[in-house]
Image (cartoon, rainbow, N blue to C red):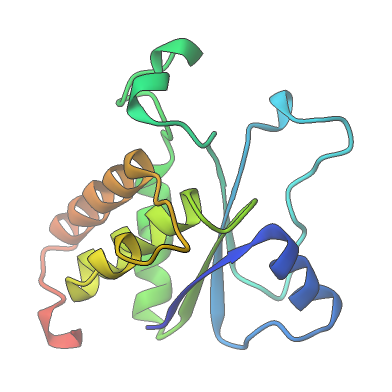
Length: 159
């Protein structure tokens, strides 16, 4: 499974030019729509592309209390996203992780996927183009581990 990190702008370009990669699922991060500028909407990937929309502000652990959040209440859909990732993985699909700038939330998500399945998530943290959101990383990684346990098996044969 290939895991790619891209920005909202790059994703819009792929969509507008009809160049979106085949057999690819998308995890699309966006801020809560209630707190966004007027006219902002999540990207429309259409009905042909398998997409999981993830509403989560780009926050570090220290800033969660300022938003009335805790680690437990931040990004409550992490388990749902992990199941989406497992479905894509089981279907042999590649995954694009997309957020506004393609540097933080999407990078944290990609690092968690790569660490869980291939034990090389550090490659994202070591790449200076990215600033992986560590809360997103841990929430998704932990959720992937939980999904793996609930499926009652190991994915070692696919590594």
